[in-house]
Image 1 (tube, rainbow, N blue to C red):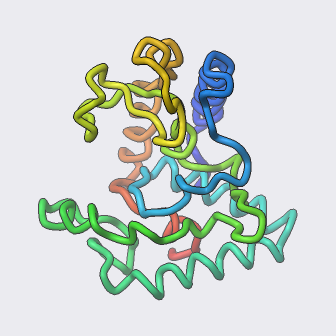
Image 2 (image 1 turned 90 degrees about the vertical axis):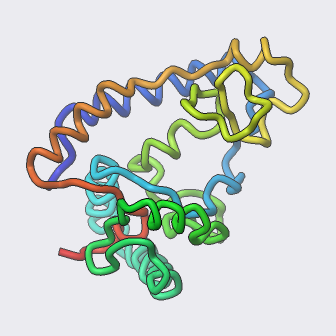
Image 3 (image 1 turned 60 degrees about the horizontal axis):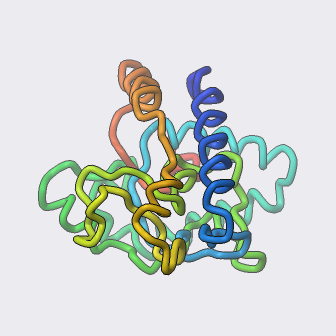
Length: 208
C-alpha cells in the first residue's frame, strides 16, 4: 500500500517550514549532516510514517539493492536485540496501548541507533522518506506538555541548538507544523484498517 496522495503535500509543507525556520535561525540551528544525536533512541511513528518509509524502502531496493539489504540487515539486528523487551506485539510491530506498555516504552531502547542510520557516513539512508518526528526535530516547535520545566514558552528544540539564545530569539525561529493535515491522513489510513503506532525497525521489514 502506498502513502495517501496528500502525503506528498504534507512533506512539502513540512520541509518548506523547516527551511524557513532554518533560515531564520542561521548558525543557532546546529543541525548538520553527520550530526546523529537525534538518530538514537526508539520513538513511536504513525502508520502514515510507516507507509512513507516502506515506499522509500521499495525505491531503495530498486535503485540501490545492496544498500537496501544493509538497511534491512540493521533493522533485523535491531529487532533481534530489542524485540524480546518490545512493549507491544513483536509479531506485528505494533506498540501496546496500555498504560504499562507506554511507561515501559519510555525506557525502551533509548541508546539504540536507528536502523536507517548509516554508521559509516552518519547519514540517513532513507532521508527523503523519514518520519515526521525526524523532519521537525531541531528547530523550536510547540509542544503540549514540555518535559523541560525551563521551556516556559511551550517551545522545545534540540539541546544542541540555540545555545545561549534568548527566549525571544528562540521564539522568533518557531517552526509551524500542519498537524491537522497529518492527522487527516492518519485517520484516512485508520479507516482502511491501518491503525496503531510502531517503531522504525519494524516499518523497514516486510512483515506481511
